[in-house]
Image 1: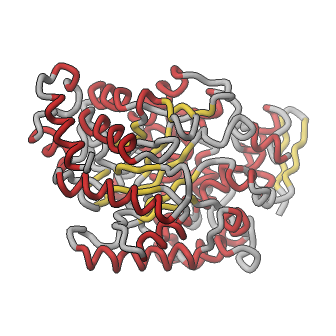
Image 2 (image 1 turned 90 degrees about the horizontal axis):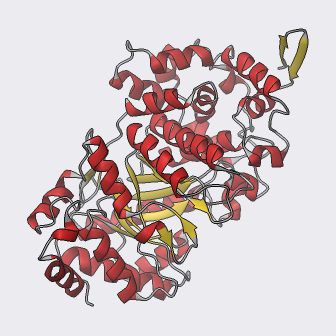
Length: 466
């Protein structure tokens, strides 16, 4: 179905929804690379005008990617609840934006509305929203999850410790993890990206982190961000798996490039749930997944099917929603400037990813990051960090000195997160905050002046077997 708009005697024609969304999306180098972006500001404005008048039902009646061609489309439609969607079916995308920003829509109403939406609808409305809109709407939505602790409540900002090591040295990993703990990070997860994807190496990392957590009675969880098949093989060999990790994309072909499909993820989740039931100590039992997404992943696999990267990202998040995860985060600037060229594009994408995820009901964190060859710097990341904190982001990455020595990219530090907590009056997860205070660490904000810090660190390292 074609969409036609006339602006000052200039006519713009968008032959279908897929083309319209690509033209309406804010400027991204990846969309330009894919040939789906607007070619002028006027064309983008015309596309937004047309998009505002599209009924939400059109996204169901005219799928961007037919379900008989794509497993992600099938899964998303299989999960669609027509009864929950019925009150919103006649809304246009523009009216949806008004509903999201209205004071008459309660936080509970936003949660119900978001869970009734298909991901493409969430992507579409985000294209009509300003920076302020994205921050304000997301800040009104809370998504609470539970594993060994509780994340996502009002007033809570969590952090993933990312203690990566270029040689997977267990002593180095534990030292970086302990440093993060003493600085107040780690309530989201202690999550290691392994340098090598070996079953033995992943098992060793998981056992070492589990020993630290169990011996020091830390109310948090561990994860080794290897391929899902490697983690499951380590699990079969007796390694403890708190959270099962996998990167997700928004199309079947893109996920195939990751070496996964939906049945594999579903089977892995069931195995970890059974594993948790045997181990005990996890409530509730079902939130065992950790997913990463990010704009550009489908295009980088040449599997975007002519869709813009924001819409592909929304579909990836919709897929994540099916598995009721404990953690989700967008690695917003990690793929590189071919997809998000500079500070402006990275900030916009980070706010979009966070808003869409929260709207769909996901416990969204963001890896506020950029590669070393992007046109961005530390100030760029701090700008996005503060905007996302105002937007109610669930968690950020705690990377030593904000410079990942294994992945070779720039992210956020433990000190950045501590500062964001102080600026906005936020605390770690309540169980983790109590553990910090019980260890004499306060909330990690006054650690450098703590005379007992050396003793505390030695005790934690001994607990981890170092």
